[in-house]
Length: 118
Image 1 (cartoon, rainbow, N blue to C red):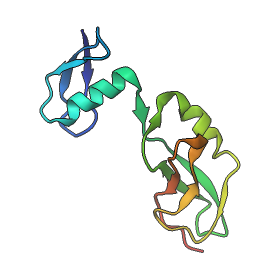
Image 2 (cartoon, rainbow, N blue to C red):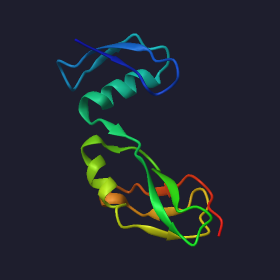
Image 3 (cartoon, rainbow, N blue to C red):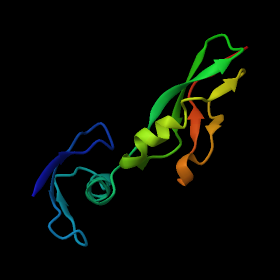
Image 4 (cartoon, rainbow, N blue to C red):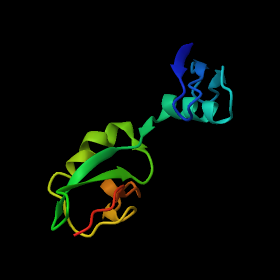
């Protein structure tokens, strides 16, 4: 039996997870239906959203914040961040602009989370 705190919503439910059989993971302690889904994924294939910054050329500021458009496998986080190392985007940048498409073949993009004018 494992204990974990759900991070899907602000409730922060304390989950009890029996993962002795990965084909039938049992979860209790959740307030909503997202808790069991989170716990099962966390036991079988943990994923995270990834945030960072990239350089901006010709913008009113020199950096723009970015995030993944969806969560990626936790084991790919550092490799995904490496794909941003040499990225420079040209201003103007708009929220939602794709900065790196299909990161590591995951189908997930890095997108801008801030507007940067010239």
